[in-house]
Image (cartoon, rainbow over all chains, first blue to last red; front, side, top):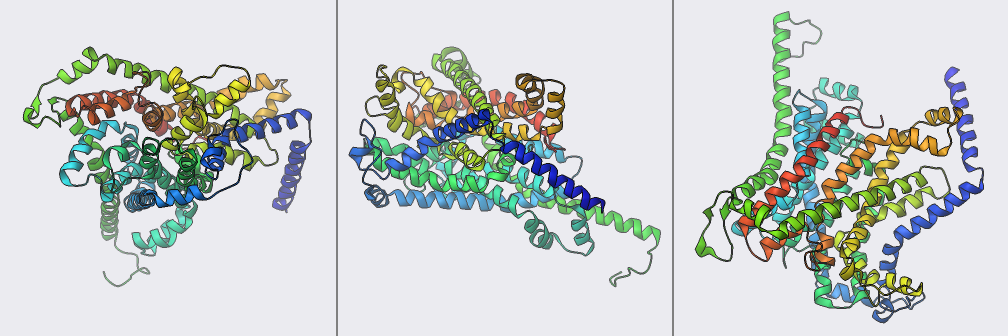
Length: 292
Length: 316
């Protein structure tokens, strides 16, 4: 009875709060309009790039800018004809491969840190994170020297190995934070029943933290997809990724803005969609679980 | 002891022994789960740092193998810090550009967060549009802004400014730092916004209500309630932002190539130049070591903050 009446009170209070929020004060309308305007302004460069990708080259560089134009797919055709697709394929393979490897190594580690913490756990976590804090340029020189010597230079495997290491701290920290949220009783029950780690992981822990797992995977994909410093120094024709392709586009193609925009749109669309999908856990991922 | 004997209470000594083996095996298991990841991280990320340190004490130029690699002590460091004016310029540039980007995106991010921390129609859409820039590939950002927006003749920004009666400006030539900063602020304001928005949402309505009942106006409420309670979030946003923005590279590589002159040459870009154009392993390694030392100071502050909050999340 008390629970029921409490929930009714709660609902009424919420409804009151909502109606208070929706009541249209002139100041609120002004702020809403301002927010919409700023949101559009912030998003405009992306929108403008997408539009330019469907323009003819003349329209894309026209002053004053052309808003109404005959949309064409020529640029996309040209982009697909160029060696763009091999760069796209490399990017997908490197992002997916490195995320998979980071998960393979990171999930057991996160499990161990979350469910069997010891007095060393804070130190271990702190060290794991510190590997992410140091500038990549500090590791760049030996990587160039070693990769050229052992034949990993410009190879997909070499880049997957590196990107997995870059994403491993994210996987460990983020998944540890999601695992720590699970009710311990379920796990203890499973352990008492004699279930072993692979079973517990596959049957209980991962299904229960599926949204967190998805968000972690998406963030790891995004970071690998966009990485540039290592890619531009350690790859060339064989394993080059989209950031490298785009950075070389202007020097090789001159003033082809429409094609450049089409190539850019294809390069950023998957990542923006992934980012929107991961929205709910985004802050948690970006702050390594400090903000929930 | 193979048959299940749950109905019988085992003797005390055996129970203790069983508990110990259980504990020991659990401990071994937890280390076995943890170790592959830690070893992998150490090999892939720490070993290169140690090698950078080792190289930094050598004279080694890739294109002159006849010189070999000779131990020269601290010469690379004294060259970088004392005799190389460009490296000093690069440090100053890095500080200026990073500071401006962090400051700019923090102010914009806070404004965005305050606007979004209200209930209004299409709030989710506005939020989604505002975070999108953060996912854009840095090289795409630079290529698009450099051409579609900042091109002195065909760029959109110059069309707007000349339409308003201002002079035509070649932004990347005349204000290269500003151009780089504005590109990066566009990307990083959403990052700051997300962290600060999470902080704002953690401030309970009761506290605001209480402040209002005590007669606080909107400005007093902002200054006395919102800002202080956002403190840790500001700290987190600034430190994390600095760690990442100090490494800014793609935008500079594409938009300015460090120029004109050395106007936008930052430490990461200068290291890249030293290795890829001068092929100088020793000098570039010394620069890399100095960059590591520099970042470590900020990283240490951040790690202290994160380990302080890792037991209980900031909002819970």
